[in-house]
Length: 291
Image 1: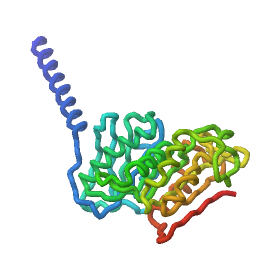
Image 2: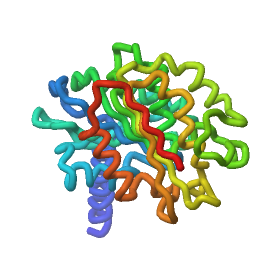
Image 3: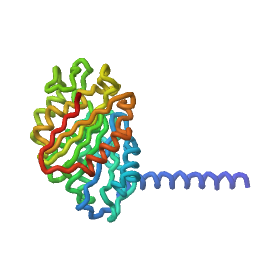
Image 4: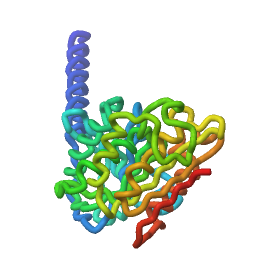
């Protein structure tokens, strides 16, 4: 009897393991159904280095629940081979859907992120018919979106980036002294290959692109957000105004303007909402917010 009981338990355990593996495989291979949303413009949220698709949950929640900007959300995570993992789905009733986007290789370079982002955006266009999108990126997420804006503006296989919000993004990833200290800068004392690339390819962006750069400044004596120099976050000033339809800067000053949570401050979320939903222009707008 004891032997019989042990045999039954082994078989039961094996069945549970097999079922768990099958459920895991089904979850990994899950794809949301295709829905015609070609009239909608999704909001893509992208984390910074070390983050994941949940890193901008607070912004997503407030855009959906406080500001009523969106009513549905989808999560996408892409690996280095371009395989996409989905969580959730969008329905035919989706309005301004939010796509919370993540990179499995979350320490890779922003230009690699941009290539994987393109793969994911090809899927979104094929699945939902999106022709345009708005993007919000924290830190290196803003850089990935900038590469996307310059490298794929004319690519008809992906949605065109219509609005770009870069929050605390290190466009000129150098120390504060190498970036300079004058926030009214019109040039940089030193620049990185990445910055040189953005300047060189600035004419590739869509002429209808609108850009908001949000930077943090802990104090006048410490013009950084604790990690990224304020000037580095505003270095978009040197290549976007001449090419984009609109370029706006916003500087947050004080002890709350720290890099790790700059994308979660009430001001950042409110400014992002305003830019995505309220800001409209038929003319070129350049607004530089420095002392």
